[in-house]
Length: 230
Image: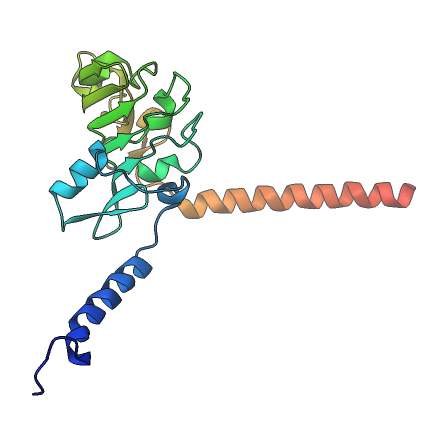
């Protein structure tokens, strides 16, 4: 095998291979829109970068997101993005463990924006914006001059009386900070989980199709009579 002297073409092979591999990974990883809706990248001193870098190479920073090898969002940094609200793409980050929304003119009420964010454990907000779900939805809420940090999302279903809100055949499940939902037990569905057996998609679409067809025929007949009358 030919020796790889410094400066020779052979010495560049490992570097070229590494570059091609990095480009291949970048190309194969289709970034969610929420990661690129704001220009720039995650700042090195942010809590999201700190969280992501501690678990390298399991996690990697791309644009505004910290992703695992499957492309799942575990961290989201939207600092200084001029956001008045979280926007329509925000639910893509429902798997995030840590989110930073500092330096944005956000509205105060963010509770509905975090529906489904059951994995969230650290949320950094502007100091004048309250933690979604209120203080009772978090283990600790710390207010500084330049930020408000909400840590340790609580499971609302563990609170007194939460299970009594669900019907007999349903159970409480967390649905984000300060939010919960009732999930029907296996074999039950419908209003208050009263219907037993699997939900029949064939029957549902059959009824929907026949109703749509009937309405279409009725409208067609009505329009035809109007056309003849004119």
